[in-house]
Length: 191
Image 1 (spheres, one colour):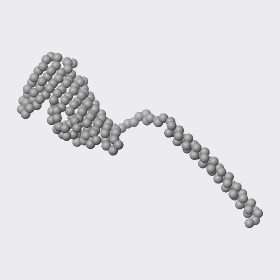
Image 2 (cartoon, one colour; image 1 turned 120 degrees about the vertical axis):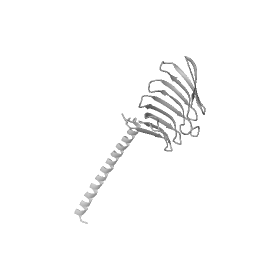
Image 3 (cartoon, one colour; image 1 turned 180 degrees about the vertical axis):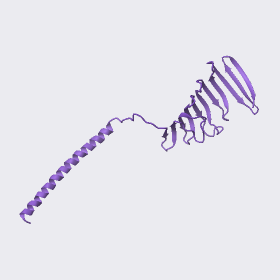
């Protein structure tokens, strides 16, 4: 090789070595910046979303089953239909059956319903206890028997007095006994 070619080759090698050093330095700086920003994001408190809008929110268990369902309107339980539209939520068992519901009806009433386990009574309505405020603003507790019939009712009357009513249904009649501050009353109605 000639001296001129040797000199050109030496100059090229020197330039390549200089570029390699700069590339390594730049890579090191970028790696440090990436590590610092990753660590900073990991250590800094998470940012909350100022507002979340949805019509339905489902919380699943570890097997992907719907366990708590919020909705506007509130969802109906598996195989059931709500008596009236409401906004609220339902808690389901592992099989997807609603066991608890809370809802605000479009008409203004607010109710909580507690349901029996499937197979415990008439499958048409597993609800056993209601607690709420009716559309006119009166508080109540309603008890249903395993046949889905009304068994008892504790309520606030329009005169702001509390009364308890017991129901017993036979093949041919409905017996009602009402107790309150004004005394007891028993009524029998034909079916």
